[in-house]
Amino acid sequence: MFKPLPLLAAGFLAVATLPAVAAPVAAAPLFEPLVHQAPLDLPIQPAPILTTQCQQQYQLECYTPRQLRAAYDLNPLYRVGITGKGRTVVVDEVYGSPTIQHDLDVFDQHFGLPTTTVQISRYGTVPPFDPTNDDMVGWAQETTLDVEAAHAVAPGAKIVVAETGVPQTEGPGGVPELTGAINALVNANDADAVSMSWGTREAHFPGYDQGDYSSLLALRGAFQNAVAHGVTLTASSGDGGGFPDVGGFWPSSDPLVVAVGGTHLDLANNGARSKQDSAWTDSGGYRSTVFGRPAFQNPVASVAGTHRVTPDISMDADPNGGMWLYSSFTPANTGWWLGGGTSQSAPMFAAVVALADQATGHRFGQIDNALYPLYAQHAGGIVDVTTGDTADPTEGATGFPAAPGYDQATGVGTVDAAKLVFDLLLRYR
Image 1 (cartoon, rainbow, N blue to C red):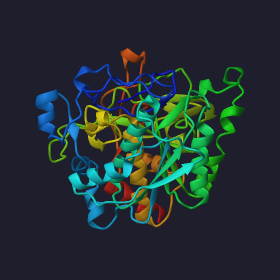
Image 2: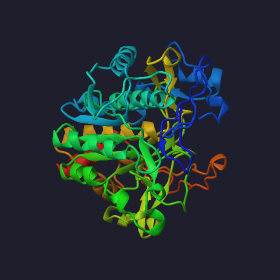
Image 3: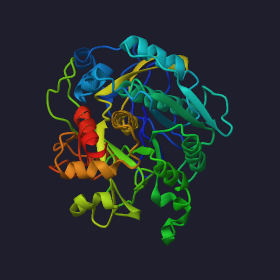
């Protein structure tokens, strides 16, 4: 339901539903409702409906985990026991959702997925859920999306929700708590891949205008610790389209983090593609001011130039083609709705990393160090996305076109998960 304004902080939950019975969620320090695309104004449903029904009734696409599993070639992995078993995916959230275990159970039962116990790990004091607090409602939706998206891709992985109690606002507000929660789980050896569906402009950290980046750099300790322990960090690249000249969007701009962008999928009811994936209009692409070009982006230096650019890789993010999700944390938010945004693609890719960790028997840390060489070698697990663009005039985003090779619309492209895991297994076991 939510996407950021390009110059504001954002959690990147873009949802193709605004409940007819609920008032729109008011703009908060973190979220803004995605209401500008009328076809996506889909009421909460009592049960998921087929893609063809969504097309006929609402003129949009809607997908189940089964369809996305087919689209990303995940089933061959499941058939040989690669489900993420023995690995842990952490989703980093403010507040969390009071009904996440119940909601995941309903989600699993409906789609025939294996059930799992969600571990809640609270960092600091987390206030009780207040259904009249728009920020808490937004984060409950975000938590639902992150957990159900990750579980759909890696059904055997352990899911940990890292909850904090300080709102994440533009600049460093709430960030020490969010990174502190990650650090605590890394030190407890309770994380293999971490997904962050939050972020803030580099330009909104104190000192940026004077060329002093110390207030941002001081918050990187948890990321450095995570990568030193082999933990992979993923972050939403941002929603609202591409912005060439406004600086980076952190943490996705951090070279220690995999920046996950968004694509649009056209799938039949069985998950078969009717056309190739394209760049999602609102997928964020940025060029960092704070961070120079990391070594792993040397193969794309002609695009990157001298600084870190994003995204690195992309998966399904268009809410017109989002995944069915279930929630029940308020009466107005009880039922089935469509997820989307780079909030969906980041936990999905973190779950792909968990599958690769299980298959190879080890963690990858900053897995961009593997993805970019595979891209340069034209490995089958990296699938180029060559159509679409991220120009969004409604947001003032000039955007980037998808094109052959690396681009700032979709990064190196998207994934064929079975081939990617096999590529990693051959290269890094």
